[in-house]
Amino acid sequence: MVLSLITKSETAKDQLLNLKLKMANRNCRNTLHLLKRTNPFSHSSTNPTLLPSSSPLNSSPLSKFSIFGTRFDQNPIHLEPNVFRSDNKALSFFNPFGNLVKTKQWGVGVQNRCYGSTSGLVQRNPRFSKLNDEDVRYFEEILGAKNVIQDDEKLIAANTDWMHKYKGSSKLLLQPRTTEQVSQILKYCNSRCLAVVPQGGNTGLVGGSVPVFDEVIVSLSSMNNIISFDKVSGILVCEAGCILENIISFLDNEGFIMPLDLGAKGSCQIGGNVSTNAGGLRLVRYGSLHGSVLGIEAVLANGTVLDMLKTLRKDNTGYDLKHLFIGSEGSLGIVTKVSILTPPKLASVNVAFLACKDYSSCQKLLQEAKRKLGEILSAFEFLDSQSMNLVLNHLEGARNPLPSSQYNFYVLIETTGSDESSDKQKLEAFLLGSMENELISDGVLAQDINQASSFWLLREGIPEALMRAGAVYKYDLSIPVENLYNLVDEMRTRLGNAANVVGYGHLGDGNLHLNISTSKYDDKILSQIEPFVYEWTSKHHGSISAEHGLGLMKANKIFYSNSSDTVQVMVSIKNLLDPNHILNPYKVLPHSLIS
Image (cartoon, rainbow, N blue to C red):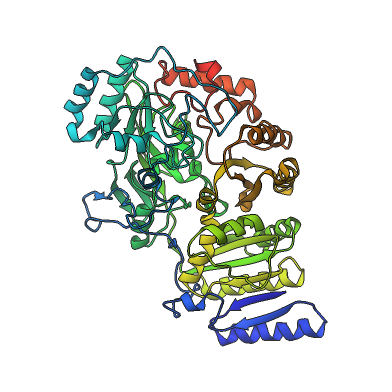
């Protein structure tokens, strides 16, 4: 076993050398190789003095998005919409609209067939009106003609999810710039019984952000201003259309970080993140958005604006209604503004990429990380060898930091703290202890931001690699950690050579991303996957949706995770807030209960 630790100080080096000698004297099979300024990725380092212990490593290797406009003062900051890459014709997880425009692969209309679930045919609700010229004229009056989109190519992109599995047939895309305009749109649509689908960055994976039929698309992309930021409290208030990566960049300049980080940050919008209760890569440290979001502004189906945009950490005055909208996927109202608590940026950041011989070692490593790293542990991600191979074979720029051998499992650990010396000692002690206990088969610690980004690419790039490999069936599951990988093994046994079964995810919070990769979509394969995957998850007391939501794909599967009484209460809330069911119809709740 080889663990390559890139150390900064002679003191750390001496300590590690002493430990190496002690291990050798005890005939330990583990050998510790110390590299002071070299590493498998050292040739890619453009600034070798930028060590992880002294510089935050919060940049994505695929970051191409930045904040535009004036520096924050008394005026709102305008965050420009995402700029798509024009020089890359390949599919990109970070550019779903660009994928559609460049590839012309429009997927399969969900009203005819849905490859993501065996839920059967979805019938258009006959209560909904159909769009006419008078409707279009009304929207042009309140929004201006340029914000009422009827262009076929733009509509194709907005009608289709980034995976090309769900495609609607909407004839109208609206781009409001203010909450008042959203209110006017919904009030009119409710009076006409015109169905509406709210849309953020359209990076969802369960068909929740695109029309099923001819719903009017309401895009929040033009509502992308930062309204205020309080450096004392760290509370940010912004509009729903702000792209997550732009917010991350803004906060970085202010000395703070977003508690939410995920692979789609270059395209996803904060309103969509809140509406789906996105989890992301650092939930193990900062918790879910139910804890980070302090307030929201939302517009109900009848146009009523609910001002719950508070910036208080404590407010015990009645029902905390904001939680109804966090994770409701736009089915109860459209989130237009968000206030969120952001933690200060800490100076000491380290990223380690480790190899483990089996899943049991990954579990034990997680237990040790929680005990030994404690408050500085900010991410604990895992991927299996199948995931690693996909990334290395299908993602440009991906390199194996542990090329000497093929391992069964890989773990990415990130620590974030305020005391460079203490954090380093904790991490080194944890790694060396894990070596001695044979929990780690190999590993490397990032020397600089470029190496850290290279490690993160191997984890964050898996969804894109899966897209490049062919058709993919995706399942986002919460399962008790001790049983989590058993589902992957059972699925491999079940499918045999018919598919490549891939398992990876957020091990720190028990979230498995189960992906079944095939050359093309096949009903026979799907029948082997579903309903088995849902039954297995329910049997092991898990959730069929950890962070992606239910959308269209799993609306009828909700009973695998919730009792009938619980679902009936959800339906009652839907009937109260959206009695005409115009908001994101056919999603989240069972069709039989809300049709």
